[in-house]
Image (cartoon, rainbow, N blue to C red; front, side, top):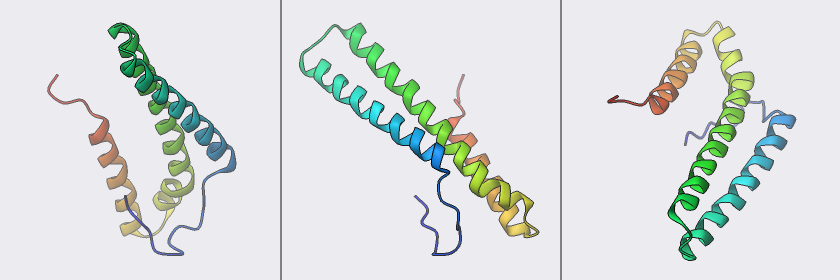
Length: 106
């Protein structure tokens, strides 16, 4: 995780997004506890798989919120900057994220 020096980024999370992301995180926490319990109880495999997939969807939803916040608070300003370095960094961040989400080998 990148830690930025004090003052590099002055904007914090947008209040509404922070509220929604915190709520989503708590839902995921509950889903994950349920998954652990299902495994410990040796529940039906399809039920465990369904719960795991539901968690993945919830994490994707959380990631979308965090990405929205990042675009609105950091990327937008970086791309509008007159600094080539800031613009390049923003583009590289987005491309690196794309690479992480790109499914290869299909």
